[in-house]
Image (cartoon, rainbow, N blue to C red; front, top):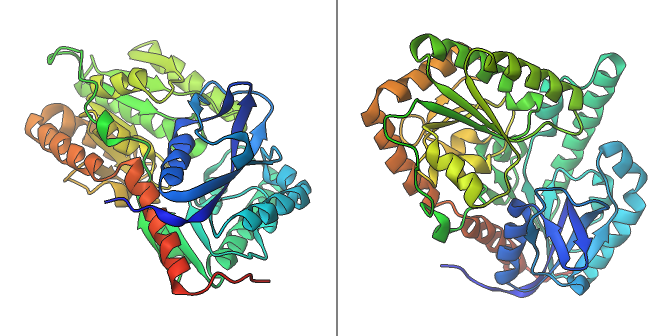
Length: 402
């Protein structure tokens, strides 16, 4: 049962918000989380990076008014964030002045601005920056060494932040929580879905339609789309009519890598049924993709707890994912999904064949996946942060720290 925290809550994220005459617009994942936190606190003020242009997926209008949103500078990279840390520091100090406790999403592209906390903080650790840089193909030579060094520095700074006094952690998965070993906190599975939306859309394809494999996400190196392509080629030997559907787009940051992945998918499309749906906002059109698929594949090399795993299972689509990051916190192998090793096309193909040929297994995973989804809504995710904030405030007086 949700509890309202009778305190002023501040929320910090480097993710983008777009402002126009109709209000503030963000992606559904961030927007629903902020709205849920606002509903569970006496008052919520957010500090978000303002983007000059509205992204197509920024289709969620925040309930916050202009007076309750502090504007961080646009920080698309750590290099730009480092140059703007003074501005960020001032915004965060103002947020602390207005708040009794802060909830801060990590990674944050101007991490130095987070030092010197004056209020209790709950850090939501969303991703492993070192792992992401480690699998990226965007850096070459000296730039790769520099990127690894920056990622290491960010990781160490985050470790310092989460071990500060009067601090708690909500980590996206057991692996991230275990990596930092904070004094207070918990591992949690992130989610965007609301309870009322589960099974609000049902399958429209006939039962005997070809086996459809679905991928949803950005075409970035850590997402492992190349492994999916190789596995799908193996699947075609046994299931020549199998379909692959791609929902998403290339990464702006790693455009060249995304284009290489798109070329590999285009070559595959010359001899198999491959459809490119493009970006889909969070809502019925995306839900229908889940409902019509026979399996969602998450072949990532690095992850927190991907929300897409919960979203797919909310519409009766079983999942096959890699055993990395926080994924095992979200998926129990053989119970509500199947887990395989990363970078192993043969293992991924075998898992897909199991689902394609074993209808009883498919049905068991669907039923258990729905049960997991009902326990893992955005309200549950937000309540975990509010509960940690309440425990911090209850532990002692809210005194300023220097």
